[in-house]
Length: 268
Ligand code: MG
Image (cartoon, rainbow, N blue to C red):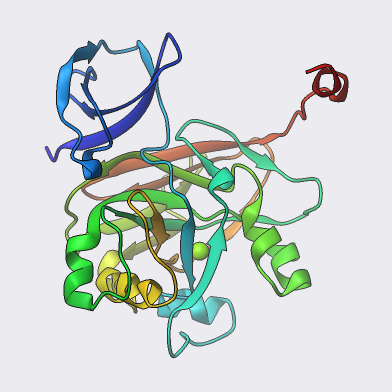
C-alpha cells in the first residue's frame, strides 16, 4: 500500500501532519512532509483523531473543461489553453464533513477531480521542472452552483462557497496515469462519473508550468485538474463519493448550513 500522508486534529485540538498506518494509527510528523517534516516520537491511536483536509493551501487553482467529454456536455470544446479559475482556501473541507447547500442557489453540482499538491515554491517552471514541484495527489470535489456560474459569468461565487472544496482523505506521492476516477451518488452501484486520469487533456506537469507563469505556487497549494463527464445536481441529504484508484475515496453529505447565532458574534 502506498504511503498515506494525512493532516489530523487530535482530541486535545492540536493539528498534526502524519503518516496513516494500516491499523489506522498515525505516526506524527513535526512539519508538513513537503517541508521536510520528520517523524517524532508521538503516535495517535485509531479513533483518537479527526481527519482534516490533507493540506491547508494558500490558494486553490482549478482548470475548467479539461476532459473532452465534459467540455462537450457543457456545450463546448476543450479550450485552446487551460481555462483557470480560483477557489478560496476557505472552501476547503475534509472527508465526511458536510457540503452546505447555499440559499442563493437552486442547482448545486458535484465535480469529482484529481487534485495535485505542490511541494515546492514554483515560479515560471518548465514542464520538466514542474514534475519535481508536484509533491503528491489527492481527491477533490469541485462543488459548483451551476445556476450562479451561468448568471455571474465570473465563476468566483459559484465555485467559492464555504465547503465547496472537499479535499482528501490523504495524499499519495504517485498515481498511475491509467488510474480510474469515479463518482458515486448515494447508494447507486453505478458511478455517475467514470473516466481515466489519462483522459485529461492538459496534463499535471503542463498545468503546473502554465500556472507558474502566471502566479507563484507555494508549498501546500492545490491544483484541481478538471472533471470528467457526468456532472449532475445534488439534493439536500445526498451523499457524494469520489474515488480514485490508488488514492481512496472522498465522501461528503449535502446539508443545510446553520449559521452562527448573530448575538453570539456580537458578544465575542
Ligand atoms: Mg471542475
